[in-house]
Length: 443
Image (tube, rainbow, N blue to C red; front, side, top):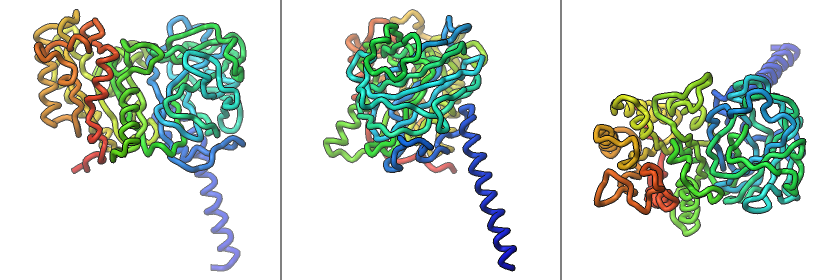
């Protein structure tokens, strides 16, 4: 080969690499949420605040977009700043967020977004020196098409573990309906006009119990090597937990895992994120297109496999399939749905821990026939024919004198959902040793 032909060949190779790199970047920027977003690698972005590539990207908080917010169909959140308050499970030195317009019917135009560490609990105020502007592809503005989501560039900011973080977005125009997670159990805030960079919190006079647009916060962490995703219904959503106290069982599992590691116990260093949706089922979707409250099967790829650096998923689903079915639920159909999700996780090398279904005697939906379905499903789970490992929440919270019901002090009062003490008991009963290892090899 002549030197000229060699240079020409080299030029073609370089051009191909550049073209491929450009295609990957464009593909991620316009992703509809169905691909693995870890294609962003270490999250380095063309802005001066980008973090150094040390540590591991993990999810420190997330939530599932669950529906279109009623009453926002026409105006959305036009000319308003939405300040979402979220709680971290691990800390890091860099951050990036994911914003969703899954339920929108028009483009969502976000002209400014910021991230900051909260000045304290129960406030819209930020620590001023932590306020950072978020960018998207290097610029402050992003337009998210209907049905899509976008991940921000990475930004350098120290995010402590077990802390509240404020992620604020401003959209100047009508873009509804708003994609939201209804039951946050956490107060967030809204202000009229663009106050994304306001650290005082004074303009944020409207309070809300929902999260809007925001679906994930990742951190570049030296504290964690991977992410645990909890996929569930209202029991995981923490519907009866005390607001603003982070008393869901997932919050307390995160605290317990961190404390045990700090005490010298040999356990995986994982963060914990919550993908619970109240009313969620294994098999049935809600109404609408896209469906409000999509089934566990339909959202598994989005809400589990798309989370950053997932190592373990904990599935706690099935009770609503029993209680919300107008006819008697088929336990084999529910079990097959759970096994399908396990197979999807195994295909990606993710280990699956599954929860037994907790009792609901005394709840308005209780019947002896439904109790028999619950017992059939739990027998299969305990026998090891569904999951890689078991979290026996049923045994941990049931009344020892009447196993059909929750123990009184673990019952929130509706005979289905736990009290704060019950959620704490769920986390306490979780065998942390089951987090070790990986998914079994597929035969």
